[in-house]
Length: 314
Image 1 (cartoon, rainbow, N blue to C red):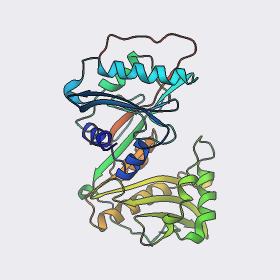
Image 2: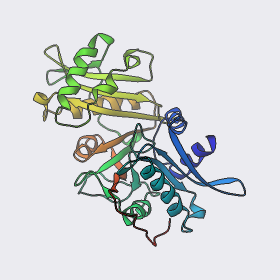
Image 3: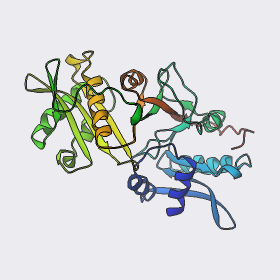
Image 4: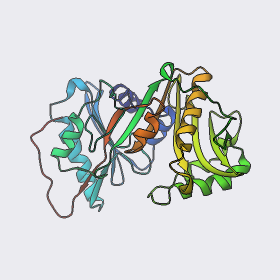
């Protein structure tokens, strides 16, 4: 599987994902692999897990030769043969990328500074094959920033700001953190509390910790701050949650600023956040983060229709 990992890294260098996580997903026992080789060198591959295409990639010098189309044919036929009526691109039991990287936005956004390697070729390829963006009028994207440009340095973790105490969480806070994150996500399909249940997050020496906002002895905000989990000199913030009754009071913005300042203070050079969505470009952008890539969250409902073949080649 090392060949597949190397292919992923060379074709998607702008995607921030923990190396061990990538390898674990690639090695999942339920994966079905399809590959193309030239002189025994891997030049294209696809990974299917249940009804999800986790990866479909062709090395740049071998594109526009029909390899991508033929790999997608095999993926689709395998999924249909196993009784599924819908094909998903990106997120299944886990994900290498949330969807198909693209420069295409599906609704207006702010704080955009796309990686120069990102374009809409791959998303157009799938659209021509009948896939649609399942998130409707909502963008999915990653954001990044150079920490040398971060200037929101007025406060630090441990401060009380506008009556809110911002501190690192301990394991004793776990029940309150789950309650806060579930309340924050009560109108969403995905509950972030599943990420906060990891007890390792509450150990002082861990490279991931939870920052909480406390008001009147009650946790009203949570944020996961990560150190080099997805690359050298790279810090991450994410899973921002604010209790529903405390929204629109700059608590989320303040947590992101404090977490980002911490990453800069410990000497990291860059920061990022992954797999977020429309509206949060404003929240994170206020601290200096910029959209680096969008994702086409592709799905295709098959029903009993025959596959539509496209003359567009990847």
